[in-house]
Amino acid sequence: MDRGAAVLLTAFTGGLVALQAPINSTLGRSIGTWQAAFVSFAIGTAALALIASLATGGMRQVAGVRDVSLVYLTGGVLGAVYVTSILVTVRTLGLGGVTAATIAAQLAVSIVVDHFGLIGVAKQPITAARVAGVVLLGLGTYLVVRE
Image (cartoon, rainbow, N blue to C red; front, side, top):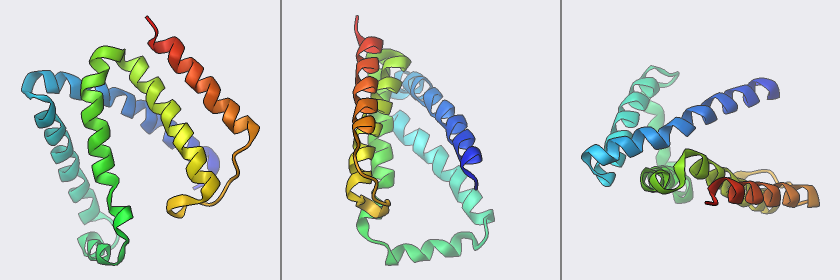
């Protein structure tokens, strides 16, 4: 995939992620926070099971999970923590606040992961420009969430 298409796809799905918080929060008000997180992941799991079944190699590819380090199996837990936390925090911060805080934290953690080449990511040094970007996002988050 070329970089332009990757940016467009990421931006599109990022927009969809922004909808996740209010949708799941409303579901959580109806059925409970943990129950809503469960339903959200159960529906997502069913959709992914269908897609994985139809993809090249089908579900047979899943057997390869035995050869993967445990750290690479934590993504689902991390997603569950995120989804469950936004179910609650969107009620206090609003969608803009949740989105701003999420993006600022993602960028801050990402430049550290890049710098050290953690979890299979190619090394990219922390630069003054990257730090400035994190600081500006932090300030932007403050402006969005302040009363």
